[in-house]
Length: 238
Image (cartoon, rainbow, N blue to C red; front, side, top):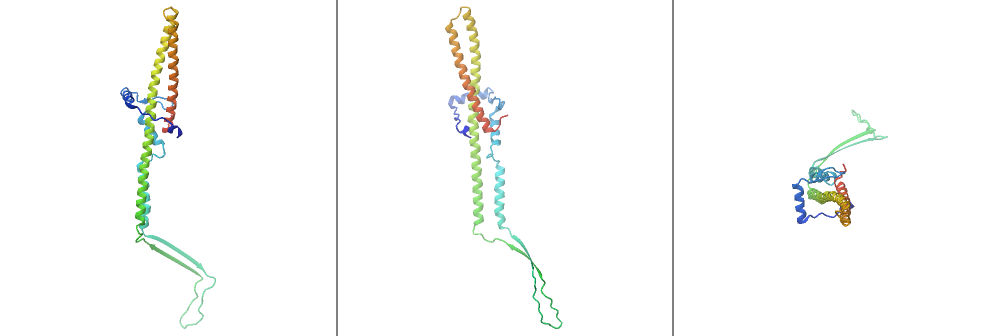
């Protein structure tokens, strides 16, 4: 995810933490965007965990561990092998020496063999025990890596979510400011026509409006980009 790697990490600091506290106390802890609709931090975290393939459930990894250990333990069980063989000879040995009172028939042309072999390991020199330890170590490493991956994605979601939340609040503040400035511009224009105010007053308010609109545009763009990152992290564009 190149977009996620290049995203600047959000570090709120002392005042930022106070802002976040105010956000929660005032009930503004949900992002509002066309991509998501109102969405909370917890919802984003849960969506990200479900979306990413490395977020395996611990039960799934434990089941894999059990299956591997069972496969190793099977080596100690008796091994049965059944072998069957059928042969056919074009000629058979015959005994031509007559023996009084004894009838000797020739050997049958077709012959059959059926063997059942039973093998069981008595001593393996510690090989299976070593395999079990190696399997346990591999599964444990997989669990730790899984936890690390989940933490990383949760950390990314946290940074992007709260950064987006602050952008959303600032954007709304600038929207309200722009509305106030537009209202003042109308009053100044009216006062200018009536000779109460000067042209410089109108120019001054228009400069403020221009600056506010530019800042609002930058905030809108930054907010859209951060929401795009959040969509990528959670896999949710609904």
